Image (cartoon, rainbow, N blue to C red; front, side, top):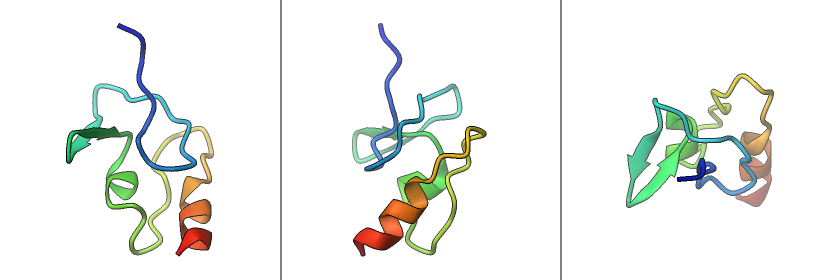
Length: 58
């Protein structure tokens, strides 16, 4: 089975063993799972900036 990417819009992170499942979708971290409601950054170690994109979309 190929690796899946995070369901957060604009996030390109691959789901790992610590993936968070919410509403049938997989997210790479809690911030992504909550759609960066409070501006939480993506917890991925690859400098993902999906939280900035989420803030601009709101």
